[in-house]
Length: 110
Image (cartoon, rainbow, N blue to C red):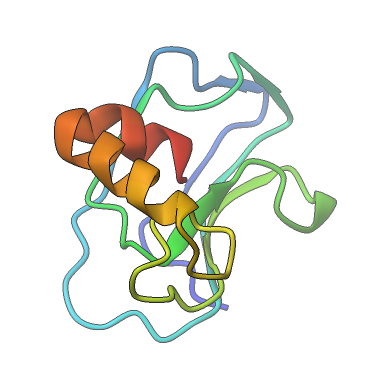
């Protein structure tokens, strides 16, 4: 487990309307990276992400340990635009949505 660039708060942490901005150099090789520890968390999720690798997601309570982590997801299947693990005709609708409103598509597929 890698712990590069982490920060710790003894009291509560808030993600409300915050942006997670990552500057990743090199190749990610771990299944998870702890990016924050907290005592309590308010605000739900970050409002936006910058620099998050495509096959990683943010877990706001990683392993139930009051940690925010970047966690590797399943390998992406090329052509699976709706991210349900199979390629079907429903991917066409998701692809068209992505082409017309990329930000909405990114929010929905995280």
